[in-house]
Image 1 (tube, one colour):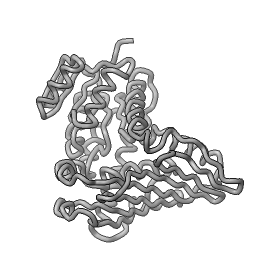
Image 2 (image 1 turned 120 degrees about the horizontal axis):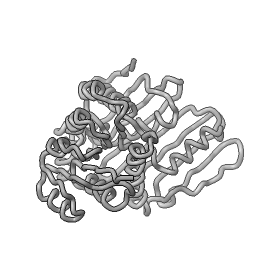
Image 3 (image 1 turned 120 degrees about the vertical axis):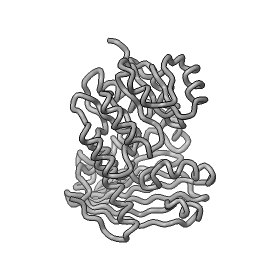
Length: 339
């Protein structure tokens, strides 16, 4: 089987990891082209991995006939622009979340989507073995009928200067952090959000307010099947890095927290028991580094073996729509009822 020729667009923090994976860790793939607006990044990555095609304009990369697929890792605010062009050029697409920042951009994509091309979204949590274990336990009836999901995401933000550069390009805290948990709730509960109410504000850095963003949020979701969810997020100087998910059911609960142990707690009618997770806080960087690789392997397998992407265009679309509604709810202080 010929190796899949892949181009990477965007060579920032995550794009650099994507390029390294394709060049060194993904069997059956070849890093055939790279692109970034910063020429020094293109030169550095191009030299490091001996990449033949190097560009500072993504349109030139997409015009290459021998590039069959692209990984889109540039700034979030430009994802939709590049995705639409890549669709027009007939490329298989792996795009980081969020795939867009508004519903109008989604409409452009939907007009161009093709059944014969793979579209995968980088919702990394779907690849996490701990969450897969929780989902399997839930589906086996360990906690009875699922009722409620609670997601907590906190992280320290001690470099406001970096955020001034990164924040505006990310779409804001809801598109950067909460969207992961919006997708996770859909994936766990196998149902769509029908109403959203969001609260939030600036408590740690007043500079963020001037940028039109927040550093704390609380989002409530009601899903079509009657289940509920609450998403909490915090970025403050003294916050620790925490990712916690709890699923509560009629007969018990499942709890996973990324901390020093990384365990899954199963509580129910029987005695509480502990399941060893994939790794705790000390292994966090290595764990997510592995997940980044695994989702690219899944992308290549979709193209070469005909498998289905862990998260497809539709998953990315629903998550963006829900994030847009959460932003509207926050700004207008009202519940948004989704069709």
